[in-house]
Image 1 (tube, rainbow, N blue to C red):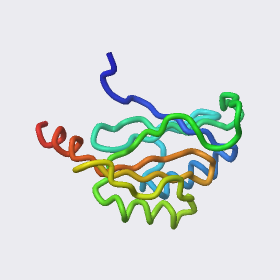
Image 2 (cartoon, helix red, strand yellow):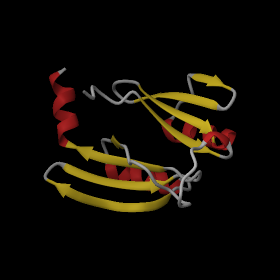
Image 3 (cartoon, one colour):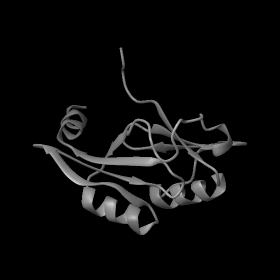
Image 4 (tube, rainbow, N blue to C red):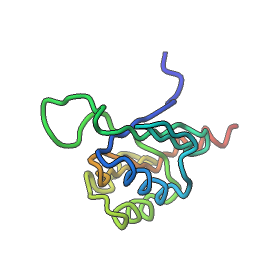
Length: 130
C-alpha cells in the first residue's frame, strides 16, 4: 500500500542552473549533494525533492514534458503560480478548479519538468489533525 510521497526527482541538462533556480524558488539550498544529484527538503513533512543530471534521464518515446504530475500543496496558489512564471517557468496548465476545495495549476520549469501546485482542502484538514 502507498503510505506517502518520499522523493520526487526532476532531471536537468544544466544541473547547476537547476540547483540555483530551485534554491531561489524554494528559498533554501539543497541539503544533500553528490556528483549528478542535489536534494532539497520541502514542506511540512520535509519531503525529498531531487534534481538529477539529465544524462541519467530515462528514454522517452516522445520529446517534451511528460509523466506523472505531482501536485504540491501551497497556501497561495495564484501568488505561487505567478512567482514560478516570473522565475522563467512556462504555463503547462492554467489554474483550474477541480471541485470544492481543490484547485490546481502546473508549469514547465526551465529544465523541461512539469511542476504541479495545488490548493487542497484535504491536505489542510489532515495537517490540522496532527
